[in-house]
Image 1: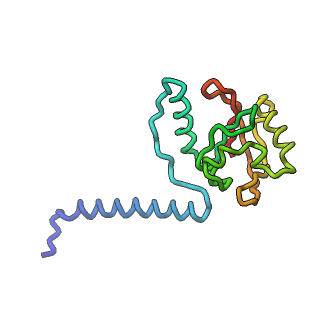
Image 2: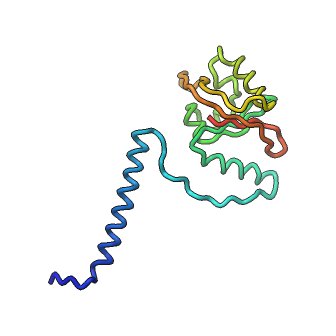
Image 3: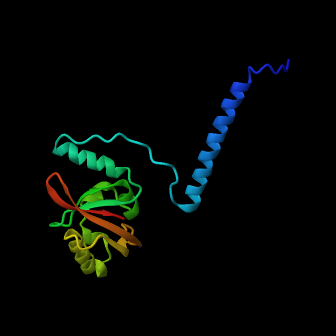
Length: 165
């Protein structure tokens, strides 16, 4: 009874290691909740180059879906959205299906639309890479101020505009 021959020590060390790891997870989560910013390191996902046009689109969508920032890809001609990620849906309060039916002017307050269209066109031409403090209009009618980084891209042979909010 109560002998200390070392047989229980590995179990105790494993338990201490698991408790220490769990404590670190809880501390990171507390920081996330208090700051509103995730601190959990992203998971590593193997990246395979696409073999054809359809897989190129699936690859791009899967890649952007992992972003914690809102990502919207717009068509410069129609100003319709070709792709939106989960974070964009959360930011704007729409489902993915609803957001894909909207156009760029519909996610900004009406009084801002002329300036937004001008900024969008300048971004497509490569004259502008970022815009700070621009309002977006949520589904519930409230506005949020965001910073936007944009970049013209080509996806499936289409010239598009990538916006990260």
